[in-house]
Image 1 (cartoon, rainbow, N blue to C red):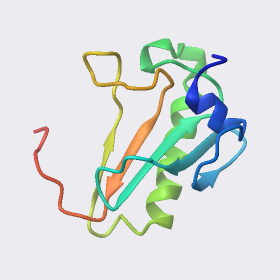
Image 2 (tube, rainbow, N blue to C red):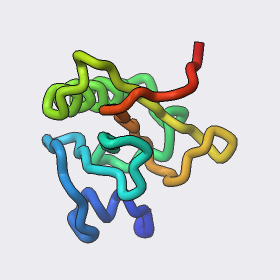
Image 3 (cartoon, one colour):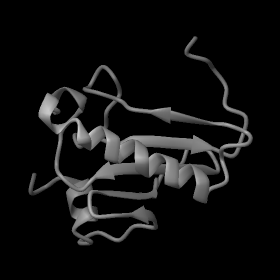
Image 4 (spheres, helix red, strand yellow):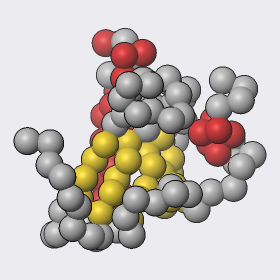
Length: 114
């Protein structure tokens, strides 16, 4: 965990453009945005991915999605829509091994998942 870039952002050892934070979660702008709004929502606690969350730790997901809702409101995304993405593992495209939700919006997004 010592070299996890998101843990360093959580500890404010690496600067970021903060969008939201509370006692359990932070949200900051992606440094390589895929749309005009691209925010990463990250638990303060280091969790590698969704599979690492035990049933008794399900509040982590509740905290993440509560923060997503706050980001969506702050960024005025609800009316036109937005995309949420959670990548998991190498094959899933997860670049940083710390659970995070991408909140992407403010433009028409191509491709559908079904």
